[in-house]
Length: 231
Image 1 (cartoon, rainbow, N blue to C red):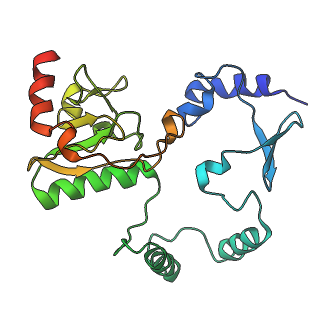
Image 2: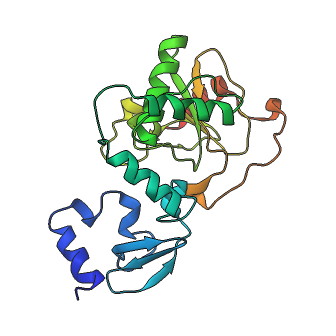
């Protein structure tokens, strides 16, 4: 029986880093990634037969647990009718209606393939609708792998974004403002949209606090002047 180490090394020979999402490489925690063979309920099993309690649950996508019988039966029935058509379906309409009914603030729904695709589309939509360029994000929040949102803060309290990863040019984040999480920024008429994780999952599951007075938070225009003088 092959080990996790052997199969991971084999993966590294064909997949950059051996994984298809950087966080799965275990670089920040050390050790060798385990390769999942199967999963059931709250457990995943690796290729060596080890069982793990799965606290990830595909980042919430399988919150009912792995291989839930009702979900598995519905997936099988749907797959029997084909899986991808390149055309609209009744199913997507019904799903959009269900989301709208469950989320009072959601008036319309556009389904996407990933969170990255959703946020990059939201950036484009906000800029197109407002005619403004600037977007605001918060330190420690993650919104996918779109260039404009892969920004880190500079040296000021609230700064124009600096590239947060290799391969992102400065001009891609030139209109991204990074502000402290749990502080409400004062916005001006250059801002197209504000993006925030309600709970900061990628920085250790940091819950939001009751909002402070916006007057005590950094101003967009003030922070822009600050970042230009300190970069």
